[in-house]
Image (cartoon, rainbow, N blue to C red; front, top):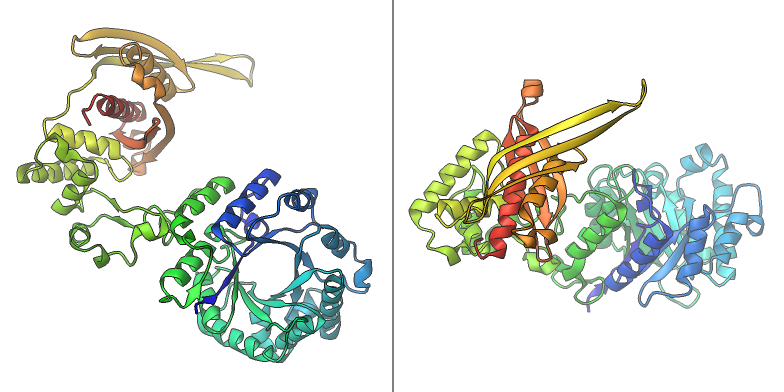
Length: 543
């Protein structure tokens, strides 16, 4: 039978220590539901003694307990020089009602002396007193052995004894923490194996073996590798976070860990709920949105670039056998394959993109058109164009090269102006106005409109829509959702070439368009017009 590896998520506590990340109470409750649906075994909801939000979380989650997940409360060993029963922080953990309490304590004699300012012996007493109190209150107790691997390197007998102290006091699991993130896989493997051996004769009150877990940080880029090394050495619980969020360089990415265990172990290990691995890309993106953090395109398995191919030789191989350049199918993790076109492309890229975008519906993509497309893309990229994030512009370009594009409007002229009015010596107001003059539709109707906006690009977009929507009402459902500007040759200062990427959407899809010019307003105009043309071409069967 497959060995069950329990996954313990600490996104809501450890992950929230990422720079710039903060979760509201609502965020934490919604996140717990998503983790429960995925099949995460334990969710660390927070530290009820630290703030009112975490106290409220435990009150709310108790009203609607998760189906699969067990919620854990985080805490620390009692303060030095006092009884555990008199520690107000521990009492708040008990009052939280959480079925499991995860207690962090020092497993390094150096940390005990220099950080806690207690003797190594008193540190052991603090661990034992705390675990006994919580176990006596009916709570299941996990012990997070902080700085375990540092302590094990400096004084292995002391570090291992802290684990025995915790389990003898009533802890059913001990978690080995690479707190500074500085250990290598070989060290993690050896330290974990020694911990498993040290606890082999100890059991829980109901006769179960003590579970050994692992908690790694990514300061050396080894968090996932170290977690897997620990599993191979006998660990049966992995702590980590969604997308590897966490203080400094982050924690082990539980999504990548889960995918590796599920897809790379030949059935040896079992994680999450059945079918959950196919949803990890969706879950990853949900947590990026929740944390208001930009997704990492190169993130293994779930990143936008994880199954993206750009080099012509790679695309040619993928067209013959996807396994030639993909270690798993993107469908296995809910991701998708992307083929990019650039100056590095070969004919295989153009053919693959033509199939993806169904361009064959508009005529045969013959050899001459493919060669012409490669030449044109190379020429445009030398000017600063890039089509990796501009699929809408690429489709329009291909339609033009195939003589299958009919423009919906053409520019006669446009103008933007900014009026700045001084209110006093320090305050000003400004208003931006754009005027556009277009020839629209098959009849060539002249449309001349003026609109205001928050800056020249917004004003141009408003004027364009004002001119076009009476004739093309379909544009009302189209929205601009993102706008990016990149300076391509910053050494040219104010005369530098700029590239503008605009992302748009309607009720069916999202698409990107690109414009390049030494004038940022003109670059924006080109991208805006492509975006509108793509929408209209799509609506009228011309894209």
